Image (tube, rainbow, N blue to C red):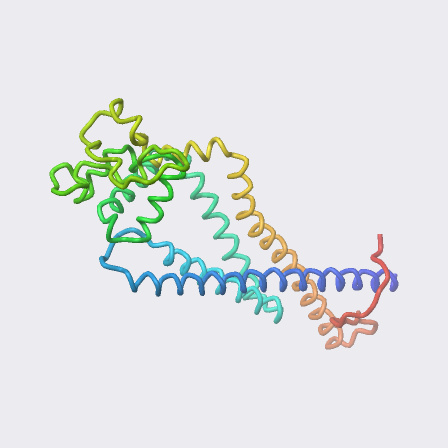
Length: 294
């Protein structure tokens, strides 16, 4: 029986050390990754402020990176500190925060699918706000140009959304009036870019300009791309969710091991205080052992 007890303690000690090393490594990786994302976000925001000409409503990628970096850095730091110190309060806080983030991401994705029309409407509304300040917000301009070129689309819901912009509105004056940006134009790969290729297209019907510019909106184009490339999207989602799920499981198992050691230590102390002979000794050091009892 004593050998079984020693073997059980040995098994628990090995699993405790294995989970500890795994959790420390996991948290350290994401702590460093969070610091890197935060540094990139701060650098991008500093550069953006140099060329910023207008306060806009569009959330800049640099701000998103900063927020993401802060969350990753703080949460991972809590995990590193908790796993190194075996602090139950911090371990539980890390577990709950990680689980809440995972649940919120899943709930947000499910809600977005359930209320797809409202989600699309909200996206279109924000894109139109960005179009309004297209030439004043370089972040939005670069993103919109990339999306329109790569996804072969124009505007948010349709090409006429570009009338929201003061320079492209049909009532404006100048060469860009009533014209779509050149990134909306249909052109071959090696064709020289004509920046006025979308001249006088916004006041015409779709059928009369569908050989000059892309007429479908970018929101639908991006959603269709997601559907057509569902395997890639599934891989991206798993790449985001699985590491968090793995962290929740490892932290939960580690908390169980720490609680077992605390309970065993308290029982041994109680036996010593009661004067009971033969109380089990509790050993936290990493002594060698061969195998766990079956």
